[in-house]
Length: 330
Image (cartoon, rainbow, N blue to C red):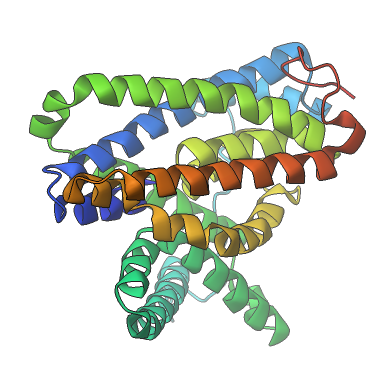
């Protein structure tokens, strides 16, 4: 779930005797970014060539600026943000940055309150609290949705410009990726490069095959956009999922991103047992007993069974339609 969660789990494992586990976690997250960027963009191009995308998305992909990333010299530059305040009073970007910062502070206070409450649950609660800090982007996103709903309810939403907020989001994503790469210790990466390469490749191939196959049979609208969003989140984090979605839906006019945020809240409740059990393999190594390891395997098998049943209920007649097809066309 991104560098934060990977590093948090790795640091927890370091306390159980696994030297350099934090750097290993960051490396796995960085490799996930590579899968999101390289394979994710390849999936976008595949959708264009095979005609899986809506016509408006295919037209946008043919744009030279989209292909090169740079606006041509002769083209009029598009407006990236709009002023919602008088420059003599406060710079509009300062206002939007303050709004983002205040929202993040609220999510920080929420996590602080949860950490305090979970402390009464003993060691299991404290371990869960540590892992929750690693996935703080979920709480930040949910807090942002709540703040925006309150702002709109108070009818002052006009002071916030969505394009300006998108620029701040883009800056945050770029620096987050750079920071996670810079934090990797090459000493430990060099020591574990073979298992890291094997695990990341095996996991990346599975994700690249199963997510398009499943999404084409589950969803009824905006199927390719939803698939790209889920692929980006599964290999990277929410920010990389949004970055890939922006290729197909630059203005976020579809409901793909908002639907995913709603689903993230429900998924979080379902994943709590898994988060609580994530340290069991490390405990097995620390104690010398395989009991905790097999417990984790059992929990993972239960999740797999639940996922298969849920998929069959949602996809219905399409669940096994043309199983040899990578993407099930309408």
